[in-house]
Image 1 (tube, rainbow, N blue to C red):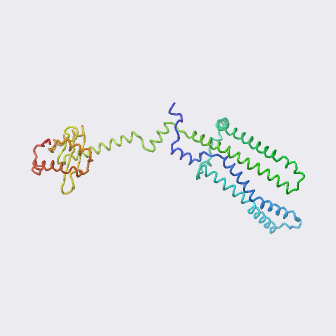
Image 2 (spheres, rainbow, N blue to C red; image 1 turned 90 degrees about the vertical axis):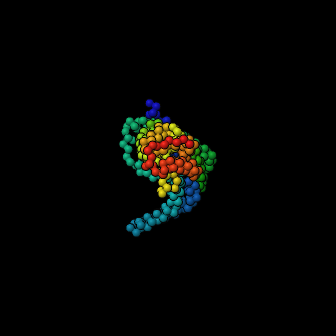
Image 3 (tube, rainbow, N blue to C red; image 1 turned 180 degrees about the vertical axis):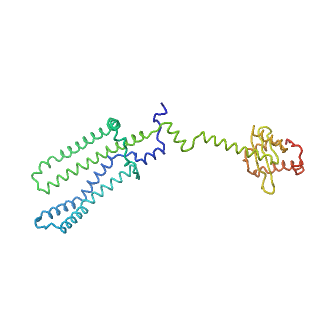
Length: 363
């Protein structure tokens, strides 16, 4: 069915949910490439001190081990010296690698801490699911990526060694220090070039991971509608509530019509009920208004309660457009409304109770 096909882009809500579950677009190749390059650069900067530290450590242990009486004090001293050695020579390299790895991860996904990926998922140990993953498009992509990495690393190593072939042949004629310098230089060149090559591969891998992730979280049209209903409420329920609110508002408005002083009409399309209480109002107020059927109901109630009905098309249109129910009329309509009210008060001698028939006037 068309509604069951995942053809729609994930909504922000779906993206937040998958992110909270730890399902994110992330390439481990970027971390690996940056860490390799960073560690090699750190070793180049700290390598001399590390090499001297290793030399001193070997000399320390090879001096005269038989002269040591191994006891708790000697072991504590050895452990302390080893700790100092690692902290001084290897810790800077480890810290650089860890910091670069964290920065690379943060650049890809931002700050994210969730324990949900650690929750056991028994579906992952399902043999059928395992076979599906084994022959899935992602598995073939990973196989292709691994093959490319092996080819690239092999080619880089071969090209570097071929470029230093003459120096490699002459290793037998060099002393230990010179040999280590040549081998270290070759290993460093292989490592840097490999890291750069892996970084290029990682860029394409990250693009694929984003594409694959966005495709995996796509939604069906039904899921979009269901999410909208949850966020905004069921449209049918909202329409029903709105209808009930309108009915209640209409009922209150009609209950206020009998207290009006005058009804202004269009004459049949519009009806506006006005009331003015000089003691409590700063200006006449619209207590009910409507058009067509609502206007007809207002006029019927007016006749039933002997409320004067005045036909004034311009005034009716102006009041209907510019004044809401339970609002006082604007200043530009004071004069027109005052004339109507004055005429009604004069007609009824200032008292509605003296009316026996509701007059209908045309201005």
